[in-house]
Image (cartoon, rainbow, N blue to C red):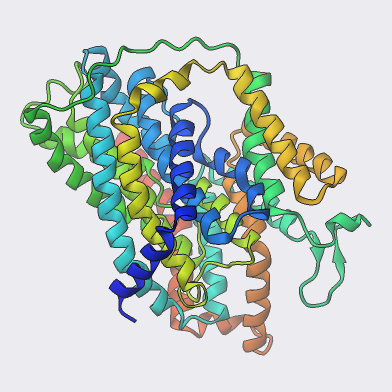
Length: 498
C-alpha cells in the first residue's frame, strides 16, 4: 500500500471524535505545561503515564504526542514574557524575544513564535511521513548483532550528550542498567536482585520510575531547594505581525526548519545545538543586525523557534524506526509504548501500522489545533503564570502518588516511588541527567537479549560483531562519539593557547 493511502487511513483513525478529543486535551495540557515555568513536557508525560492502564493505546499515544508538541509551543511564552525558558530549546528564544517584549513588541514576538512553530512542525511532519517508512524498511534487515550495536549507540550518545558531563551521563546509564536487571532472568527464569520481594519479580514498573525521577523529584526539588521567586512579567501588546515582520520572519522560519530537522533525526541530536546555530545564522546574514541584543530582532525569535520545533518533531524518526529516544520526553514516551507491550523499531511500521500512521496523522491535526490555541487565546495562557507554585507542586505530588498507587493498589509501589524520587533529587543536586536512567531501564533488558542472541549466532565468539559490515559501521560511530568531542576540545584549547 502506498504512502498516501496509509496516511489517509491514519487520518481516518486520528479524526474519530474520541481521538480528536484526546489530541485536543493533550495540546491544551501541553501548552499549559509549556507556559508554566519549571515544568517541562517530560515531567508532564511522566506524571500522566498511569493513564496508560485505562486508555486505549492509540488515543493515549496521541494524547502524549499532543503534550509533547504543546509544551514546545507554550515554552516560548515564558521565554518572551518572563525571560524564563521552560525547556533548553527555548533559551535562544528568550535572548531576543524578551528584548522585543521590553521594547513593547511582545505581540509580534509571540506571533512569529507561534506561526513559526506551526510552519516548522508541519514541514517536519511531512518529512517524518516520507523518511520514517523508508528508514524502517532498511532497518528490517538488521539482525541481533546490529540491534545490540544500535542500542550501544543509543546508550553512548544519550549518556555522553545529555547533561554537562560524560562521566555523569555514564553513571546515570549504569544506574538505569542496574535497575533494568532487577526481576526474573529472561532465559533462565532465575530471580535477580529482588531481595525476596515478590513485587520485584516482574522488574521495576517503567511508569513508576519515570514518575519518580521526573515529576516527584522535580516537585521535591522546588519545595526543598528553590525559594520564593518573584517573576517580573512584560506587558502583552496586540498579538499580530506587520508586513515588515512577515517579510523578515518567513525566510527565518524556512531556514530554521531545515537547520533543526537533521539534528532531531540523529541519536542525541537535541534541540539546543540547532537553535543556537539558527540564531547565529540569522544574526550573520541579517542586513541590519543592530537590533540583535538591543531592542530585539524578530529573526532571532523566528529562526530558533522553528529550529526547535523541527528538531522536536524529527526525534520521532529514531524513536519509531529504531526504538532510540533522543530526548527526556522521547525516553518517557518510549516507556508509554512499552507499557502497552509495544516495542518501537524496524518492525513497528508493520506490526502496529494502524497506530503508527494514526500517530503521524495526529501530528498534522495537533499542529492546527496548537496554532488556534496559541494565537487567539494567548491572554488565557498568560493567566496561568499567576498560579502559586506551592499549589502547583502540591498538586503534582498528589496526582503522581494517586496515579502510581492506582496501577496495582500496592503500598510497596509508593515506598518505591519515593525512594526513586529521593534518588532523582540527589541526581538533580549533582547535575546527573535522568534520561539515561530511563533509557538504561527500558533498553537494558532488550540489549541483553540481543547480545545473547548475537553471541549464539557467533557460536560463542565475540568476533561476530566484527564480521558484519553494518555492526562494524555502527561500532565505528560509537567510537567516534566517544573520541571526536575530546579531540575537537583539545584542538580548540591548543588554538586558544597558541
